[in-house]
Length: 298
Image (cartoon, rainbow, N blue to C red; front, side, top):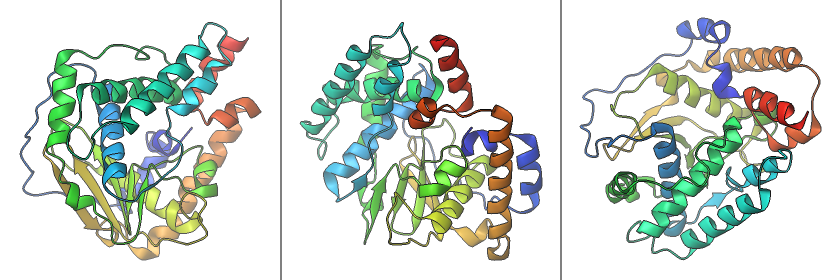
């Protein structure tokens, strides 16, 4: 269970149709880097890492441990996995990225490292090993480097705060997991490597959920509260950051009602899943991945 999975549940989404509005995006920015095929989720996750490491190289940024790191720990509970190989893969990818000239370009080696982290990330989030260690195709490498080349870096320059992959303290735990892509000052931004630069209502609901958790529970355990009042989507294939005021999507008077709605359904889902497993809780896995790991450990 996570905020994402909650928002895929009909009984959670139904009441939100009248409470969370889609401000839309007109005109839609044109696509500059088309998809060359391959696995969209893997490309999207790999580019997320490329962008975050690029931001870290340019601006002062606070980042929690990247999601891919948890995949190696997950392997300890799977007797069929080579956990040492996963640790080495993760360590090597971080070493390559730390030594790459990310302020200038995304090299081929750095691109491969981002795909390696993406494979581990998807393992952590889904429990599937399909993309771990899989060599990206030349088309994959050309595509991610083209996406990196059109990033409008100054659009992400913070005045005060830049956090990469932020979580929301107890709020993230209460909904079974919630981590945004970026927090720039008072704006939460989602990275979308989608084929069409369209602001879907699903994106808006997710961003509103992150903002409500951030405002109620804080960011990354920091005592300093950040009042998130703006939301944004970075359309990676267009190279465009689209920001909008939170009030365009939800009335301030409805914010507490929607937050309570999320928390109530998350509590019911935890009860439905059943007894908690401390090892799986430590890993922060979604429900589907928990079931797969339980099966492997049995």
